[in-house]
Length: 407
Image 1: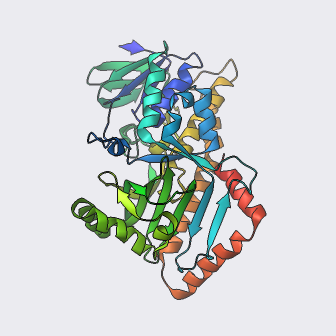
Image 2 (image 1 turned 60 degrees about the horizontal axis):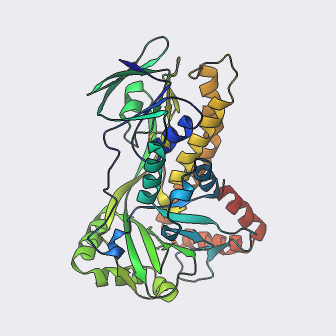
């Protein structure tokens, strides 16, 4: 039986970032995951263009700053990250004026966000971890968690380990969350996200485009370096299956379908699209843990990232929300009173309270936007498109929305 100060469960970006963040504060971390080297997001077929990962993230200013503080931002190849200077969001009326235009220039900012491939972030985290003397990585399968008076006890197929605090970053289907008895609220959207990368004929001008389509779909084309874009298309499960088959058997027709579904606007903005890799899919839902710490009376577990909250990708804030979890948890623990233990209930409740407003605001906005555009009656369609057009005329409100997204 081995003892350390923190055990982290989950080998994704949030788990790796949390391990690095706490280790740089001098805390001894045991990081356990079934696999730290998953390359499933890498679409390499031997050609350079296929080496671009389908899974990309919009990195906000606060996430960029966290990565800089952890000294991993510098390890991400600048040629593999793309600054976003404008974002254009279009309603489903087919009229370009029924939309919102966000501009970094108008907000007196150098950029709105960066688009970065998932694997680039993970590779930088992996590299930084090799230099940390406070992180021990263990590839093992989690089996169970229990508590004694002082610590949490984690059982794996390779042994039993104890720590005062366990961080569950083991994803939306968190086994740790289930075993600790933390319930969730959930909305299954019956929509699937399709992701893939394209070369575009025209320069994207560092602009992200997002279309709300009249059938409830949401289509986003995000800029990548070198005249490439990354697509995220939220659509029904049946249409997703059709599109995946189309992309496999007739990539050119698939690319044309993207433009035609958005009334030709992608073609006008970006020119012809050429599919670069195999498209992938993942189901969509809204999910929130009813508590972010547990067990209730004597907490020794903290949920981070998707284990705590899952959201629709239309706002591009899912990873940023998880990274803000890490930022606030590290701040709460490192600024604790000297007499408090790392798993003090008052301390962990302090962290939970700090996260609730941020999480509920983002989940609420994305959930209601998704529901709003799923409804197709003519009066509501007129109202939402008119609302977008009027909002676009309010520069001060747009600046406030940008400021919120940068947090």
